[in-house]
Image (cartoon, rainbow, N blue to C red; front, top):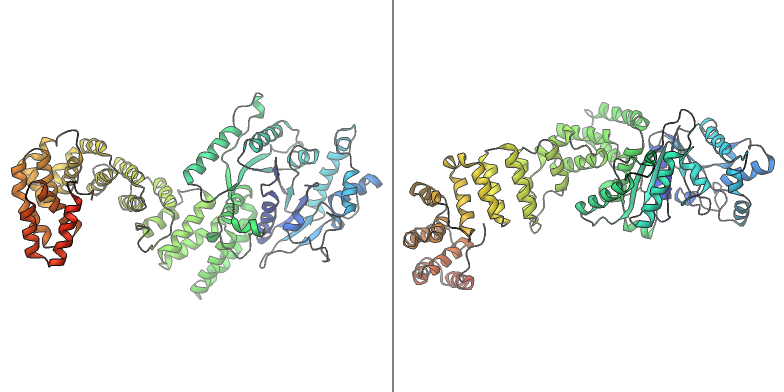
Length: 598
C-alpha cells in the first residue's frame, strides 16, 4: 500500500484540496483509496470530499479522535475499522473507491471535548506510550480490513506529534506545500531535514520529499517563476550542518492560483473544467505524474485505450471524441500519446495536435519525446502579430523547448519560432534564437539571412559583423546575404562601410536586389554623386508599385540630396492629386530621418 502524506508548515497552502483531488484522480483509475484527516485541530477533508452535510446519512459521526478515544478508554483497538470511516462519492465512470477516515464529528462540542482530553506528549513520549504502535496498527488495518491500494494522509501543520508520525514512520512520500515567504520556507526546510534523521522501520526506504510551491499567480512570467523555484530548491538543498540532514530535491513543482476557487472552492478532477481551461488542474496532473507510480494507473489506462483502439475503425469520430474526453479529465501521458497518434493518422487540424502535445509535455516534462517533435515539425507555423487573426494559440515556450530537445537545428521551425517572437515584440529573444540556429546549422543561407535581419531589427549591429566574419565564405554565393549585411552597415554610424561592399561587382549585386540600400550605402561612403545617379531608377521602381512606406523613404532620400522638387514633379505626374498630396505630406513630416528598419 502506497502511503502519501501531505504536509505544510503553515496553513493557507491549499493542502486539503490537493488531497481531495488526488483521491478523486486515483479512484478514476480503479484504486481503492483511503484518506485520513490528521489535521485534528482544523479538520476539513470531509468538506472537500462532499461528506460534510450534517443532514445526510454519510456525514462523519466518528473518526480518528473517536478511534483514539476508544482505545484510551478500553485499552484495546476497536473491532471494526469501518465504523470510523465514511464512503465518499466518486466521479461518474470511476472504477475505484474512496473511503474517508475523518478527524471526527467536527465541529461538534463532543469532538472538541474528546480532542482536549488527549495528552499527545504523554501519548508519544512517555515510556511505553501507545502513540507510535497505535498508528502503525491503524495503517496495517487500513491495508488489510479496508483493502486499500493507496493511503492519503492530510497532516497537521507546524511541528506536532501527529505531524511527525504522519511524515516519518507512516509515509512513503511527503508532499510539502509551501508559500513563497521566508517563514514558510525556513520552517519547512527545518521539518524536512528532520525527516532525514527520523527513525524508520526496518526495510522501509527513506521518505521521498516532493516540495510544491502554491498560490502562484498565473500571470507571472515563466522566466520569473523558474527563477523563484530555482531559488527555493537551492535553499532547500543547501548543505546542512549535519551532512546527513541535507535534502535531495530534484525540482520544485508549482500550483498556480485559480480565481474561481477563491469564490467557490471545489475539487477540479472530474469536474466541468478541462485542463485547457484550468491552469491549476494542469498543475495537479503534473503533480500526480510526479507522486503516483506509473504502474498504479497504467493498467487501467491501458484497458480503456485498448477498448478505444478496437472501436476506432468502426467509428473513428466517436473514438476520437472519447479519447479527447479521457485526455481532458484524466491527463495520463499514455492517453495523450495515443491521441497524438490518432491525430496523425486522421490528419487532424494543427490546433488540437499542438494543444495535446503541450499537455503531454506539461505532465512528463520530457521534451525529447519523438511524438512531440513530430507534432511541432508538422504543425507549428509562425504565430502572427496579436493585431492579426490568430490561427494558433500554442505556447511558444512549448515549441521552443521541443525544438531545442530535437537539437535546435531545424531551420524551418527555428525561423517560424523567431518570427513569432518578433511578432510579439520580443526582438531580442528572436535574435538570440536565430544566433543559436546559425551556430548549430552552419552556413545555411536562409538561416543567416533571417539572423542578420533580426539582429538589425533588434539594433544589435555590432554582432552582425561578427556573424558575417564567421560565415564570410558564403557571401560570394548569396546576394540576399550581401543585401542584409549592407542594410546593417547603413545603420552603422561609428565607422564607414567596409570597402568590399563598395566594390563595383558587389555594389551591382546589391543594386539589383535593393537599390534603396545601395543609395544609402554610397551616401554613407561619401559618394554622393554616384548615389544621386541611382535616384531616378529607384523612384521609377517604387512608383510603379503605388504609395508605400518604401516610396516615402525614397522621397526622404531625394530630399536629403536636394532633389525634393524632382521627386514631387514625378509623383504629381504619375499619381492622383489626393494620393500625391498625402504622400508628399508624409515625406515632409518624415523630415531628415532615415527609413525605418525593414
